[in-house]
Image (cartoon, rainbow, N blue to C red; front, side, top):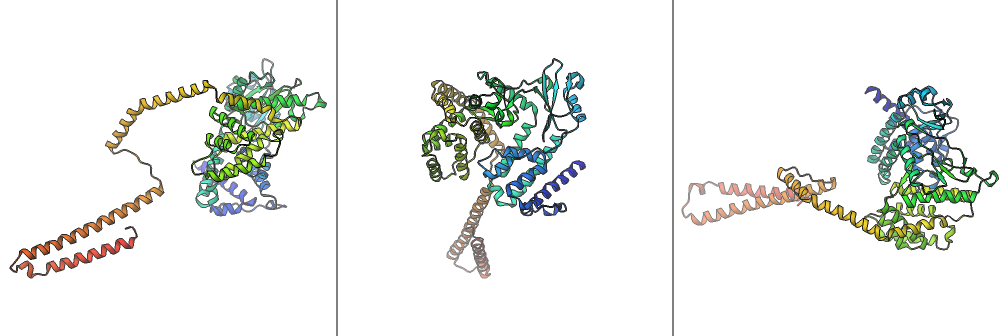
Length: 553
């Protein structure tokens, strides 16, 4: 436990010192952690002289794997960050040395529970590539297949968990003390990225993603995926067939490739993943796409994928339809269907901003419009109105931009809208398919029936909790304050009424007693009533003064 605490404290200092070093000392001061900074380092060139975006990139690279991967994930959020920051985040490099072969061998043998000599006929001790999460080695299976083996870095999970815990602490602290942090919902964004990172470092998830993409692309004979060898894979090890091909941006006419055919096959395969299946490769950059001599496409690296529900896909079709027809109301309807617009949004202002965006594309020929850029512009407008963009939609925008960028690079004559349009028609046809309505009605009927079936049980449980005094009511802080004020007002009015009633009863008794008694009595000879009346009057005046002074009458 002490060792863990020391590790946390040391890492805290590293992060805070790096923030200060790269010119973000104001953040450190605002959250009150300046005293934890290590002594300032001396450098020939001041890093604070660089642009903010470049300093963010250098900061993330210095802080290591967790921050590099978070930065790479953040580069997909064009709805949240300006373009000059995104450009730097996309340039993030895993400038990390490879780890020794002995460590790789130990991890392999522990995970697969077999000596490496029995696992592989040959295993290249020198890594083919090294990154922040793991490194890749070439090998040959006993059956003769050439494979690549991805091995996770030693202790990387512990490092990432430590960094994520510290980052969450810092962001929660910043939310309390820095106004803009809470405004931009950075803690929600952090949780989104942290969950994505935890999924990515588990190679079992990547293997499952690859297998699912392979299954759903069986009708695309020109798009291939590496073979995953599950017997040689685990959470920390991923073994797949070696890819033989040329990087897509280097597959030129001069090298014997048909660039237009390559572009068409790549774009068609990606759009089928997105629009037909709703499960797509989330990071289709040139380094993850290879071309065979037959102009077929091979995709690799499936750690990052996007998911779209059926309802989201059909709403997306409505959105594309609205963008294509330049119809603002249809775009608004699509945003509502996607649950992007919430009740607190000023819908009139949002409509005006969307209408302004429509005018931007009004005179541009449809063949020249970038769908990815249009979707990104749309999300940027929605974000200005504090609309919540689901992460899979932002990943979709990023994937569309990447596809268009590659297609325009290798085949500028191809209009991307011509490849997308058939999928749009397919989605619209599917949207109004009677069989889809029937399935949806059946599903909703089943859910309604289940709700009705459980209603007596739920009602009985609620009544039991009421009888036992165990019914829980959720009240926010603001509601508690209002409730306390109301209770104060009620209690003060009640006290006022009681005193006033007492005073009235005494006065009534005095009047009645005086009228019924003709002869003087011992009681009347003692000024007890006058004293009582005086005391009661003073108490009455004091309570009235106290109530009015509290301001809660």
